[in-house]
Length: 355
Image (cartoon, rainbow, N blue to C red; front, side):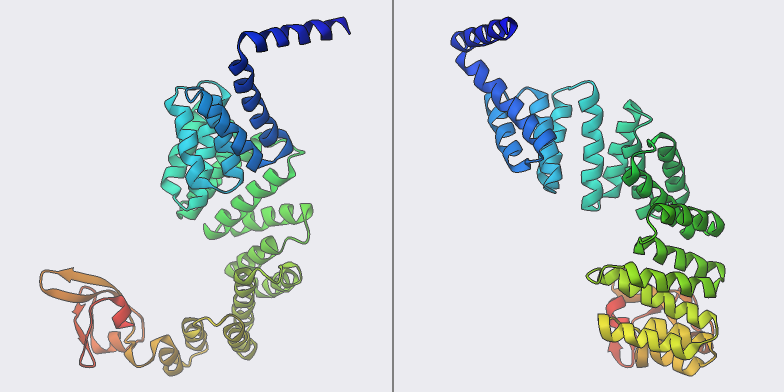
């Protein structure tokens, strides 16, 4: 009891000696409390701004402002706050954490190059930071660098604590998908099974496992995984439901059941209102009906070429970068490098006109 009285007495003395000092510290402490403990990010932002207004040169206040804005998904506001922490030459854990938050903020904005750059800086300061390793892994994955993604997810899994289930699932999920797209099918299936041991009802993992089985040629297993995934995919996740139906359709095609496969694609077309011509074209081509395949591939204007925009000098059109085997273009002798400027008496100015 006596120590408490002495503490209060000293605190009151400090208030009388410097009233603004208490108010300044008060705002900063409240900001940290609201953000770090109460998760009341709106109040945290208000208190952090109040503290910054009194002393804008104190980096931790910018840090907590950035944290609150990040968790409010206000990434455009959080980025300059974390950059301010760096500009003020903050040292220690908050500097490394600022780079990590910047990496994730850029990741969620879809700027993967900036994300990777900031994750790199975070990992220079703390090479074992599993959050930055996961973030860089996902950034590599989203830019098609699957081998680099696998390396980062491997390292992240070394440092994730056994009771951190969410991070463990995230790292496994990322490595699974990178393995799958990199054609390491056995490793991917092994990891998907590990992930499903943690959560047997994860529709996304079941769906990706289905695609991996399909790519491996295990069509029966693929259909089974796609069917199980259907039971656990939330009905409002339209993109995953759509991907699930497509995967199931192509798996049935692999089993030789073209009727079910085409019916599923038509069902997906009705539900999701997507352009099914390319999928139907591939299916009809696979079952040997090339005439119908080209009909679905692009209608009357489609001649069976892969193109890119061409605009040099006065010549505007599309350049042929490849032809499809068995298509009208190949039969007509159209070669890679040709530039098409007119089709059916219509001027071609870019890919959109051509298709």
